[in-house]
Image 1 (spheres, rainbow, N blue to C red):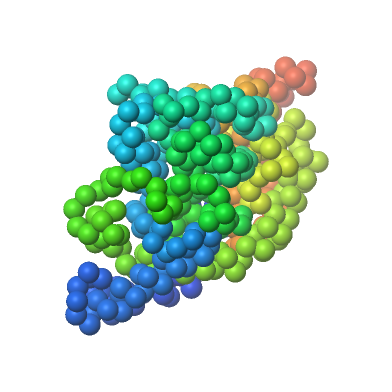
Image 2 (image 1 turned 90 degrees about the vertical axis):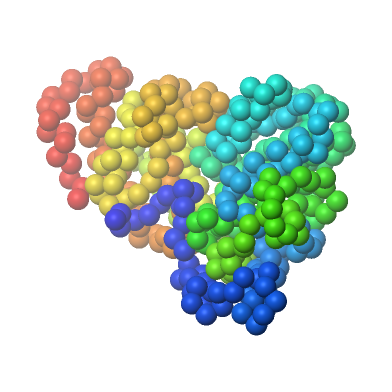
Length: 404
């Protein structure tokens, strides 16, 4: 396993305090919360407590607005499919070109079924054009779905303002807030956001648990039908242990919010400064003035992100690539393409995403090895050779870097 974990936007370590509150619901309080005997009574109360903990973190008005799901993807699908089923005469959807695949692939499928999908573009800093967005709004749009923060660059979108604009046009608004919840303050009761998706494993809760926030009064059609669970809005026996774990994780996220936005941000900034100072032809992607405190996406020109990741892993460091080359594609990620990142850099983007479990000493370790890693790979790159006009003297020797 890697010694230094900087891939927290992919998934996070489950907080030991979260594990502690989950264990009793596997071994002792294992009753079905829908039952009426004593094995169920404590379980039902624990679910209600967890619902309130989620409510407090996102600033919902009432705990009845919290619907537990299996993951962020289920929450996303439920929101969009609910909106179009509740408004069958509306055949248009607005989203962005940089959404997570959970939204983009669903919209692509709906497009094949005859829906019109308006994809709002971003500029070179990953920002949205609100004037262009306003022109897309009409009484034919069933729902707008815009992520709160981008999973690759960390760029934060003005979803509160966009929800206001949607409501003025009589359009529902959903936000995929999977990357944002627990990292930045939220007060949904003061917004016009109708639905919001979150996922437990992004904030130190277990995998397999998510939430759909549904504002009271919002028209809604369930995705899963069957039992009466979640007030008839999401059928299926509740995943009690994970729900309780998510509640505790939300409580901890609220407690650590200041740390996230001060100390975690300081770690990210230190890494960025060190890399930019030491490694030429590298730059940070996204909106540098408006992004998540834990995320940086750095482009290294003339080399492949997959190769960087392999050498980082060899050095005991886990990160991820903004490039889809890790999944076998020859194309850069859709986010980099949407931002028009130069082709020479789009393949070499690396996302470092921090959590409260990281340390400054880990940042220093990464800064020790990154210059060597990039130098090794650039020695092997014909593109870098053409830029520097320096011959690649001994390519094989480049595979003997000085880092561990």
